Structures are given as structure tokens and as C-alpha cells.
Length: 335
View (cartoon, rainbow, N blue to C red):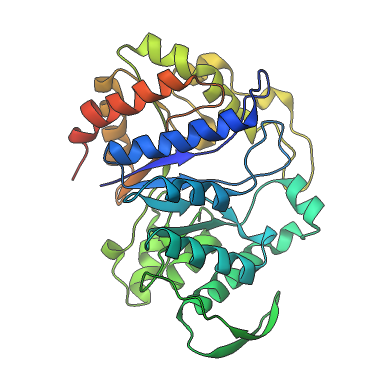
């Protein structure tokens, strides 16, 4: 089972701290994850948010690459509609070289109205833009000589991509949830940084691919402490912020939500994060039980991208959570 560290680098808007301290703590978490035996570190992207969510996961991953030597470095996720695919391909391939071939490319269609508005990207075209961009990036890594791309959304003539990746094939992970995205991910042979769905496996088989050869790694919120009370005290404020981050923002059409959709702290304390699933918060035994239950409910899950640092959490509590997980939870997960 693949165990990854998920990082949404951000402040808590109610009590922000200096950003250099915040970035250093997240990067230190990644270094700790490698020492504890984690397989991946995943860094996500948003921008123009009140919690200062990092807009540049590639730079964060590069800083982590400089301080680690084994752990794989993944984007979870790059919002492809806001990136020119040639420039992103260049950044990915340079990171693959700097890191000695440790890059995994996780991407998605984007979800924030403000980002589409400011970048001037029609949100209704986000799916087509995303998968055309992903296919172009693949070509950059695999084509020999000069090639041109003339697509629906990008016209990129005479590309001579001379910087080659270390890996024979950089793994691509799609944050695919809806049926169209799941089918496109499968048709292109991409892994999932999301929950596995029957449609995905069925489409893989139709194209002559083996589902067992494709990863499905959902995101999972976690906090481990000696007792459930200590775990909730450490994480509840940050989990409340995360669970309501998307719910209380404008939808993709720019419409404001009804404030009544907010998930109250009492529900979050019970593990209910709404559409984001179930949090695994408590003692090592309780977290183990929760994760094993999730694996039973989600057949085909091949790993987890685990978020330990919730906005506003103190560094010692994050370190304790990660160390308890590695020592007392990880050994009980499937190999």
C-alpha cells in the first residue's frame, strides 16, 4: 500500500503566521515523512484564497527535492486550466532531473470560480482544456525530434523538447471524480489521485489495460494522538476550516452558497467532512480501525494521500501525529 503525505500549504485565516515559517514547517514535514518511511509527498495548488494556499506547488516540491533523497514528489493537484502546458512540462522535467527521477504528475480541472474569472478561462471548457494539456505534456516527454500540436484549445508549433526526463515514463495521476473525467483518465491510461470507480476499471479493460496495474490513491484527513480527545483538540479547528473551504465559497458559476451548508464542529468531531469523506482522528487503534473500514468500503484503493497538518496546527502536534501513525498505524495497513 502506497502511503503518501498530502500537503495543502496554507495559513489559518483566523490567526495567520509569517509565511516563511509556514513553508518551512510544511517542508520539514516532508523531510520527516521520508525518514518515517512514507512513499510520496503530494503538494496541492490554489490561489487568491484567504488562507494563502500556495499557488506554486512546483517550487515547494523543488525545495523538498533538495532536502530528500528517496520519497517521491507529486503534485496533488496542478489545476491545468491555469498553466500553459509547455511551460509546465518544462518545470516537471527539470524537477525530475533535479530529484533523480522521483516526479509524479497529479492534475485536475480546477474548482474555484475566482481562479477561472481572474485567468479568463471559461469554466465550462475546463475538462477539455485539462485533458488536451495532459496529452500534450505526455508528448513532450516521449516524442523524439520536433513536433507540433494543433488542438482545440492549444496551438503550439515546432516543439523541440530537448530536456529529457530521468524516468522512462513519468506517472500521470488524474483527480477524476465525474464520469467524463474518469473515462478520459482511463482512456489515457492515467492513475487516479481519487477514489476508484467501476467506470474507470471498466474503461481500462475496454482499452486492453489491466486495472491492477493502475493506482487509485484517495485523499484522507488524519490526526493521531494518544487519545481521541487530544487528537480532536489538535486538529478540529483546522479540519473545520478545510471541510468548509469549498462549501462556503462561490460555486463554479459564481453563485454564493447558503450559509446553512456549513458543517459545524460537532459533526466534524464525529468524522463527517461532508463530500470530502470521513476523517480518521483519534488514538492509533481508532485511526487504524477507521482506515481499514475505508479500505473495505472502497475496493481497489491502492494507497492514501494523508493530510496530517491541518491549517493552524502546531508543529509538535503534527510531528507527534505522523510519528504515531508510522509506528502504530502503518504496520496494520495492507502491504
